[in-house]
Length: 418
Image (tube, rainbow, N blue to C red; front, side, top):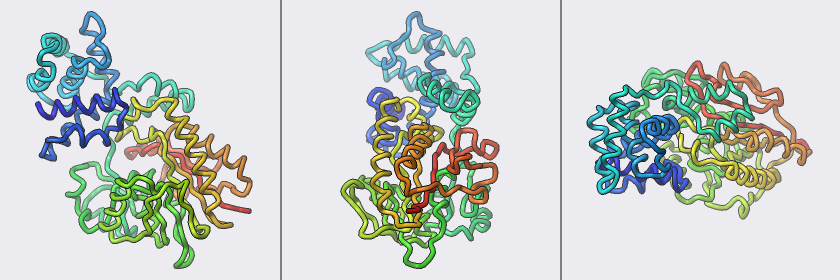
């Protein structure tokens, strides 16, 4: 029961308070000592969020009047049904472990609705339904085909992508831990398992990073000269900092969040890589001299990572997207002055919203005539991934679908020309 109570708390944190799933997990699972129990809480909650609309449709079909969205009875039914219909929990166990959540409340209602649906042979659709607001937004931006691709991407958690510290070890590490490689220095594992248990974690041979998330740093390339300097702005938790350091850059990694900077330092220590790590607000900090390259992986709505973080589908609204787009524009305007003539500025967001990608860079280039797009070339990308006609890169839910897909990203590489 304790794990189901924790799942109830976590769902409430996401759906009622708008808290990110990962941020709410520690508080919801406080008191659960076993890693397996905490993992079960995460699995139950994430699967409810993947299937929320379809679960609610089943619940509403078996009640005379709809339950309030935040009613404890609806929450308990979501948890019971997702276990029975998606996670393989026997029905009697699924219901018996959630009934105590409604002690002193509508226990009979929860038991009756669950029993009715089980006797009717209820099933969840093969492809989950996207929240209406998200579907409407993406339909307008990308069309109907993208919605189908997004539903397919949402249907199950993605594979685990690793970035290797030494791209020359790609074949060796593939032989040691399995998986397939989409690029030198990349491995994709179908069997996720516990990350610290995977061979090579302890000695820092790799870090977890979706293949799309690895592209912004890859597109900066290797430095020319031993003293070439790169700035990784909004750097934590550090995957791109590690990439730049492994490529030979002298890296300044800047981030405002102390807890995330601590993770960045841990990742540097584990991999044995070095960077100058600074905890600072980008609007207060500035470099001593212009950099040869600057990577701005800007704060964003993060709707592009919905496959592994389905909570974004229910938390992100138009107001959030507008707030993020304003912050991104201000960060771009500030960071653009920190790049030397002939240097590179790479802007990236893990967002599927044009306001945070195409529209953002279109506006930036119209205002900053000292910058021009440095086109992304086919041989810089995994096979099957292509840059847009404008020279920047947009990945969508259907990108690389034949090999397991990737996160949604927008990436523009620009050169300072004046």
